[in-house]
Image (cartoon, rainbow, N blue to C red; front, top):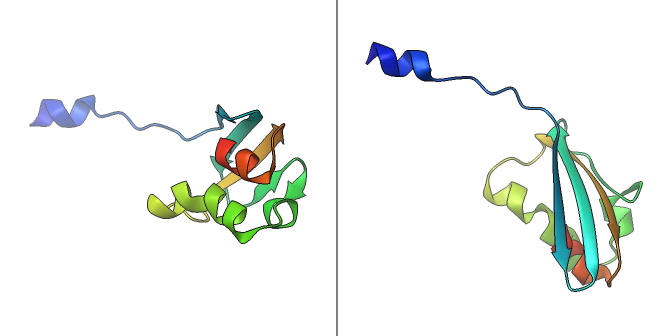
Length: 89
């Protein structure tokens, strides 16, 4: 049992980067530990997306994993319409 405890390593959370695509929309996403800020193309996500459906679509992964408000997200997205962009994110 002592050997198992010694082999466990602590991982320091830093910035993470990913790319998402849906139809013709491409999103480049950076995630880092923070206070829950969500910025899309330099604007607050609530101001960038007009529909409630798109706003909810981008935060569902955080809600399901109970990580609401624990990460700051910065996104560059282009192409497609609003729903496709939200899906790419």
